Image (tube, rainbow, N blue to C red; front, side, top):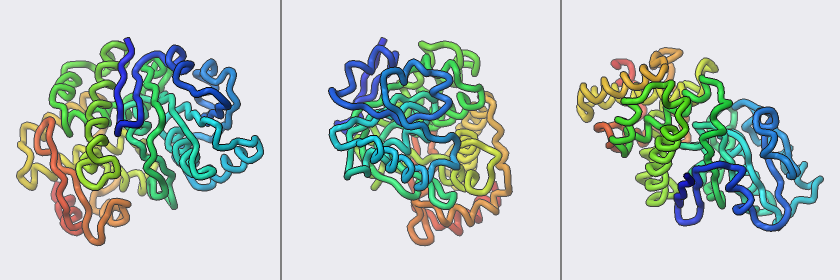
Length: 340
């Protein structure tokens, strides 16, 4: 069964089989695909019939250098504003694709086939497109919605277990932010069920997308409520800046647990709900021990792109299915972090 949602009134999200959906979604004319070797190896059939540009893999290639390389390749191929750009891959591919398409010749139409759980529930949705700068996450980017995003649960069968688990951190995050039923659905499912049951997987993907689509629809450019989607990410980005030990989802799981402990310390989250959050993340296989002392995270937090002088908007869970955004001094966060 195919499900369709809309984000910010301009971007259509489809949950269903990619090969069945894609032909009717692509516009007439020339299509250029941006992808990586993983997709060529695992899902080569998706590339048949298209010109494509292959990029490298891993967070280290998510840079302006990679963007420049694609621009030059587009010039060589004669890509112009009549062309459509299709990103096929995980969050790195879709972030780069969206940024390139939004800036090349002042903007081309684009869409995504998201092939990772992390991408399907978070990275490919919402219109944020960007690259890293000197190790800082997504410091250069745009807000621009893709024409469509296809999320095909069957494409996740080939994901390594660790990569699949990384996406679950963002699903749990969505449940904590605004969907208690989604959180409880995951609580009552094992990792193996989530991994192997396409119907269940489609259900939780749909739930997470609805949370994000609803929030982005009310605050597309992150001036208020959209900040809630950053639950766990302040610490996560600091972890990713200072250590290569964890992938993004693993860092988000740690950051979410630390945010829950901080919320408990501030008296806005009950001990029972804080325990439920940590228990679920642990049951899914996450280690919740930061790879370095929380005291060391403070310097990186001060350079978070969402900081406002000496303060930032920190997301605190206030229950299962609710959270608040609080402007906090970075020094206060650092002090409290040493105590949790």
